[in-house]
Length: 374
Image 1 (cartoon, rainbow, N blue to C red):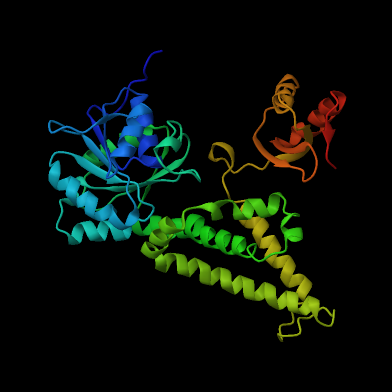
Image 2 (cartoon, rainbow, N blue to C red):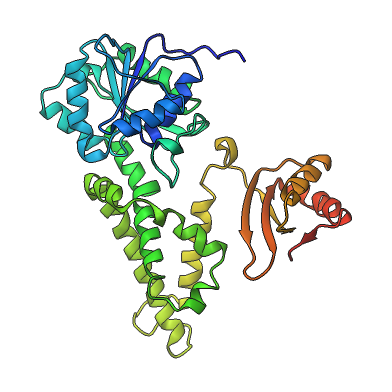
């Protein structure tokens, strides 16, 4: 099998071979790049080498680029160390917060003409080198947080890294990045965790009713608390700003619900507002519709899809047969979500397709014996 040529021309040193570091290394090795692995855990390095992610470091190494993939609370100190140890290398990092890291590196007196922070918006719930995947970054946004001390020519090595790994390069300032991830990543983590926390003392009967909606909301609540304490602490002010706005929205919903639970009249009992509780709830929920409509879909396109829920027997090969027969019907699968029906040996496959294909696909699947929910 031929190796796709890399834009990078020299060796790349990856410091920290957890999920992101190992995935970066695997992706670069697939393009023939010489990857040098370093980690405070010799075991992690050995595992990553066994998986084909690269080689161990040597005194003769002269990397073109260094990628720091360590926890946020030590990212700045490791960047400073790497800049000093390799005076001809460009250094980047993949920490999920950018402004505090840049400020700390500057405060340490390091050579920031060779440092630019970056952040791939990609990951998995599982960490460690064994979870690494060469295709983890394909089609995912990867932010480069430029600053005035680094030239475009110097930062080009980081751009080459991102393009080699199949990610989509996005340019932002460090401040813009931190405000953005507070909205799309950090505040959602808090909301997900707090919702999941409600389940701890919930009756078993209630938890047994959980379906796709609750699982969607709480999926990321399984993330590592220690890591998120570091992330939220480093990006505290922007995240708090988002959560305060959410708190204000929740207060309005609570007023509406208090009105609904009270006299049953059209006005909330605890507020003099002339807006009735039904209208308040409708406005809040419609606002959610408008927000979701702004999320980019497949290939980054803001395109809406229609959904069909197909019942799939929980036996080997059935899901594959469904997808094959969709292809035979000439309908492209845009997205897929699976859910198991409690107490039944069937799965529910929610398939997303273009709206104009729904009627034809429904007829084709019915003719082939598939059961469509609803």
